[in-house]
Length: 168
Image 1 (cartoon, rainbow, N blue to C red):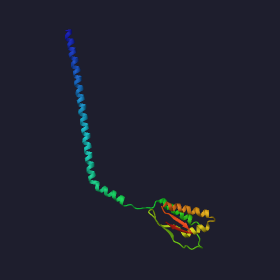
Image 2 (image 1 turned 180 degrees about the vertical axis):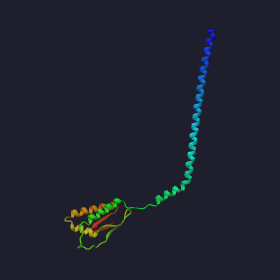
Image 3 (image 1 turned 135 degrees about the vertical axis):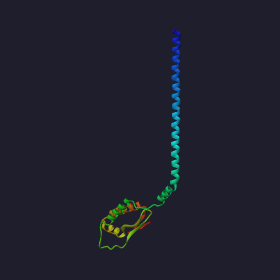
Image 4 (image 1 turned 135 degrees about the horizontal axis):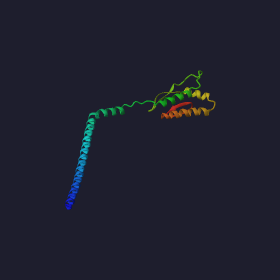
């Protein structure tokens, strides 16, 4: 009897071990199938998104191109706000000493460049007033240097020769 119980015990243990191995194989097979299922779901979702993007691209391609060409082709040149500040500060400096005794002989300087088109608020008359009112030529040269820097800011080149301003 003892040998039967020992054989039975071995059979029960072998059965238990086989059951565990079978359970592990079933669990492994289940995990593999779950991973395959998830990868197919991801692949299907990706394919659906790509198809949606392609159809959206086909529908909106012409509209987006027209919008881009409109934005690139319809450039409205504008003077930067800082340019106005520079011009107004030059005007204030040039017209610090208004004189009623000197008639204005020249209209404001006309400036045309790729940055700015319009009348510069500094006239030759203002330059003559500055030259006449400044006690020394150093002060007048500093005013001219400030004006020259501001004009170079607009990519303009000019010369002051014999009391005349020439834009080149």
